[in-house]
Image (cartoon, rainbow over all chains, first blue to last red):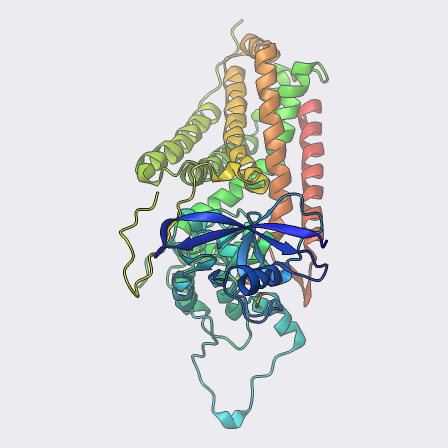
Length: 247
Length: 122
Length: 139
Ligand code: SF4
Ligand code: FES
C-alpha cells in the first residue's frame, strides 16, 4: 500500500455554491512530486473540475503561485512533505479576488506593472547605425537581481500593506521600476519618479519585509523599495534646498 | 510642475530620528536611569550634570535627539495604528495626535534646555 | 463577509476576502514586524524619561536626588527596564535593516551588506562608550 498524502484544497465555484469551502483529497506520495503534480493528479484522476494555473513546471512562468499551508509558494517548486501527518492546505493567493478554486484575478497587478513603465525609456533615441548600447558587467550587476522577477505575485500575497491598501503599487512593480532605473541604458528615472514617490508608491510601504522572504527568485523587492525611498528623499530634500537647480 | 510630496520629508526626519535614537538612547537610559536604579553605577551628581549641560552644544544636541526621536516615534506609530488596527478613517485625528505629540514634546525639550536653569536654593 | 447575487452566465463572481484586523497575530514573522514597529512607543517613553530627568535637574540638587530615588522604586524600575529593553530592540532591528536601504560602493565594488551593518554596530559601541565616559567622569 503506497504512502498517501492528504490535501485540503480551497474550492470556489460560484455557479454551484456561493460560499467557498475546503475539499479533502488523497494522492499517493512520490519523492519527486511537487504540489503541482499532486494537483494535476487530482485533476486527472479524482476531480476534473479543480481549477488552477500552471505552465512551465520549472519556476519560470510565474503562473502557479498558491498558498501552501498559508505561505505563498510556487506549486511547481514546492515538494510534497514526506511526513504527511497533517493535511497540506492549498489556497489561492491572498489579497487577490478569486475567480474560481485556486485561480485569482491578476488585473490589478497588471495595471500597476504598466504604470511604473517597466521598459527602457530613451529621451534621445540614437540612430540604428550607431550600433547597440554597450554595457559593462559592472553596469549590468546594478540591476541584475531585480531583473529576475517572474511576476508570480507571491510578494503581493505576502504583503499585508497591499492587502490593507489595494491602491499600493506593491513590491514587484517597484522592484521592476528599479530594475530599469538602475539600467545604464535607461533615461526614464525622472518620468517614473512621480509614480513611485507618491502616496500609493513607495511611501505606503512600512518595510514589513515579507515580499523578500517569499520571493522565489531572490529579487529582494523590500531592498528595492528602501533604496528608492533614500533616492526619493534625497531628491526632494535637494529640491527644497535648491528648488530650481536640482532635478 | 509637480508639487513636492510631504512623505519624503517626513521619511527623512523619521530616518534621522531612528538612527539617532538607535545610537544614543540605550546608553543614555542605561547610564542615567537603569544602572543607578539597580545600584550598578553611582548616580551622576548635580554639579557634574549641570556642568555637562552648561555647554550649548550639549543642549542643542539633546534637543535635536529628543525632537527627532519623537518625530520618528510619531511617524512609526501612526503607520502601526493604520496597519495594525485598520483605522484609516480616523486618519486626521491620528495624525494630529501623533505629530502634535511629537511637536509638543520638542517644544517642552526646548523650554527645558533653553530657559534659565533655576539657581540652587540654599 | 461576501454577498453573492446568484450566478450570471459569462460573468465571473469574484470572491473578495478582507484582511483581518488581527493579521499581525496570524504569523510569527508578522508579529515580529509589529514588535519592531511598536518600539516607537518605547522610544517616545525614553525621551519622556530623559526630559523628566532634565526637568528634575532644573529644579535643583534636592529635586534631582528625589527624582533619582523615584527612579529606583520597583514599579518605576521595572517600567524603565521594559523601556530600555525595547529601545535595544529598536537599535538592533534598525542596524540590521540599515544595509537594505543603503547601497554603498567603494569605487566600483559594492560594499557587502554585512559590512555596512557591522559599521553601524561599531559606531553604536564607540558612541556608547564615549557617552558613558563623558557622563560618568564629567567630561
Ligand atoms: S518580486 Fe519575486 S515574488 Fe514578487 S512577483 Fe517578482 S519573482 Fe514573484
Ligand atoms: S508552473 Fe511556471 S512557475 Fe510554476
